Image 1 (cartoon, rainbow, N blue to C red):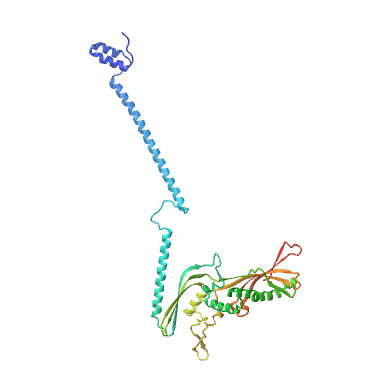
Image 2: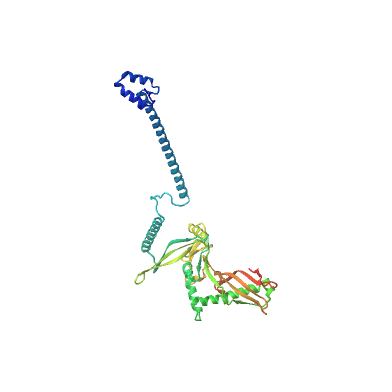
Length: 390
């Protein structure tokens, strides 16, 4: 008989054949060294399967934890990146609760417009309720719209157009003067500027250089001052203090005949003179005595009797040109050619000046603030020499 193989299948066959020869099969089972009972084999297989399942579940758990960790790190990094973008001004996570800049601007403009409209209505109601003995009553309403601080740049206006915003009285006077001076076919403004440069400014420049020691040493006396063929004359307006631009409404109510009320609105510029404001407050409180308003009556004290009597003041409306307290400057610049009598020496006079409103009736108030003499070097014509005269 052939020896049995160490195989479970053969062993199982020998077991299955036990019905024919029980003894033989039992002997075969006991003599087979590799035989193991079926229950023992099943238990080993179960243990092996359990070990495989436990290792597989551990690996799945590990992979899940690793994925969760990577997900958390990704969320944290994206949150930090979005926070840095928002801090730098860029749009991160959009917040729908915030209002857009356009909406904010519309709300501010609407509220400001409604407030100013309400203010105008209140002033009109008060003006209509006032009882005045004068035949014509006037009311001025100013609506501020823009602030000019004069910190980053100097606010300038054209001449004479800017006078309609800064000084309407002087603008009216200047228009009348220009119309009266014009005897040519030129426009009133061009004719006025030509007279201002060739007559008033030239006279002042000639007076200044004739008394300058350096100029007399170089050119001698007499000397000539003439305008350039291509004139570089410029003139403009500058505000002295910070100002507020806005709309001014003039209301005039007449009590004679038709009793008509007229309205006139125009753009204007109001200067903010801090010292003048403080001075006015002190005068109203009674802590300081200064110039009173022209519409009121100045009171003078009679020292002999200790009484106060009223002295009427002449209305200066028609002579408003003599007003000296202006909050702007009329600035002009230009150049002249200076030569000696024999025209051997030649130079350029570059000047800058303003209007002196204290002496406006004398040579139109022209006042030179600074002046330079520019000449070419005699030995080196390519080089330019500059002398500070004023």
